[in-house]
Amino acid sequence: MNAIKHLLNDLAQVTRWPTRSAEKTAVAEYLAAKFQAGQSYNGTQIKTLLNAWHTFEDWALLCSELCERGFLTPETNSSGYVRTALGPSDPGHRLKLENIQQAARSIDPVFLNTPQFSAETLSQVLGVELVVKVETLNPIRSFKGRGAEYFFVRNPSLKEVICASAGNFGQGMAYAARKRGVKPTVFASINANPLKVARMQALGAEVHLVGEDFDAAKLAAKAYAAERSLTFVEDGKDVEFSEGAGTMGLELLRYPKPFDALLIPLGNGAMLAGIARWVKAQAPEIRLVGVSAAGAPAMERSWRSGTLVQAPSIATIADGIGVRLPIPEALEDLEGLIDEVLLVEDATILQAMRLVHQHLGLVLEPSGAVGIAALLTHTQFKGRRVATVLCGGNLTEEQMKLWL
Image (cartoon, rainbow, N blue to C red; front, side):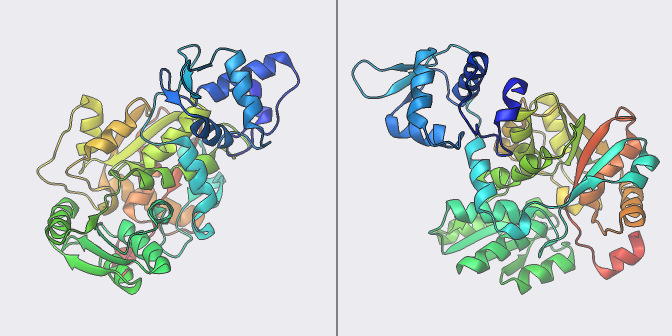
């Protein structure tokens, strides 16, 4: 990867076919890794896949080069090719890198290319070189618009959708649905943040308040959709939401200096999986660390044990990452991509929110501040260059008075 970095744009596409032999081989190996070993591809599939990874519009040249080097072998009785086992191969992850590229080109620009900068005074307090990515300066004050936008890009014929949300995902779905004339129905807990509920309704969603927590509301939403034969969409399970979130990973790698670690809030796993999928493919040396609330440890325990661990209840102010029943597909998406999951206490989350407000002038909800909280709690990042996503800023007036 480093040998051809100068040939790649920020979408990780090859911008020109090199003249030096060693670089040609490196580019061929890089492109060959996008194919799954042992799988057959027809000409159209070859063209589509190669066109996603280069910009000089000569897929036939690239196909020829891959065949010449033994990465692709023409099939005897057809016009197709087989990806041989020679060299590296993409493991066939559920999240597709070319879909993250597409998302970066098709999501509403209001959610893209968000500010990311070195937080100098906060870095001094924390003892790290901290880069923050601010996802609160958009119409829904969170990153969730990325995945919602990409979901509708990939599913343009839907007329009505049902989903469950702690509040931010529902806002993203309502915002993206309203633009397209789609009817959104959102189920949320009776304890949901009233500001988030009001915003979902203002954006055109029909909101049902059911159950004591998010997972109870999700079960009710699934039953409602099944009874009416309507489409139920699930953040973390439907892959488009993770791929949309992956655009943040693409943007983070544009930062001019390399990161030692990324600290990403971990709820159902869509944001972490999307970012990790892109970053680990382009810069595998960067440590990917998920951060969950100590009062909602189901995803952390599931990831650490390699089994699905459900919690009887949750107890945290970080409603946006308060997951009690992990999604199997979301857990599988994290496999092999992340290096650690850390837990942070509510008291430390509040301290982090206040520090961000003091040093950056930003209002964060608890889930958006857990990366900062991890830096307050865990010392292994001292002296390192780390980035975190400030992923949400929806607080009620009462919460701001109480917590900030």
